[in-house]
Image 1: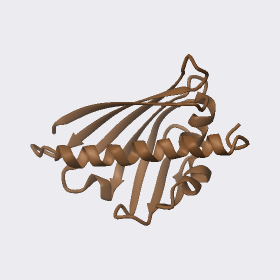
Image 2: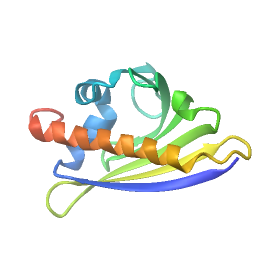
Image 3: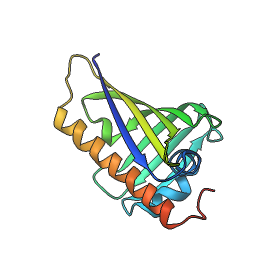
Image 4: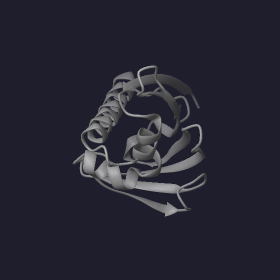
Length: 157
């Protein structure tokens, strides 16, 4: 099994607390409103904290995904989770592990730092363009979420 690591950063004008809630703890309420491609997000195992399993259903080419929450630090706004099942893994990936850190920025907003580890099956090397496209799509979703929060200051307070 090979492991490929990636790092992304997103700067927003939204506080770490609000963005953490929107993307992590309240994503089942917020993300379907932010993106028409997300039909639903439901917790199918656990209470939403560490060990929980969430299922996301979409209308696009990725019909469903299951992620397991590995750890959730609500005080420091850090979440770790693993994509364990779904169309996004295809035939090349065993799993994808993520760590998301929501940090204060000097201007009062947030810097979202995302580390991802792609674990491939056997000796398969995932296509770089596929990973890049998936990451760009995800970053656009996160930007849209931040824009939604700015437009709706009453959400995730």
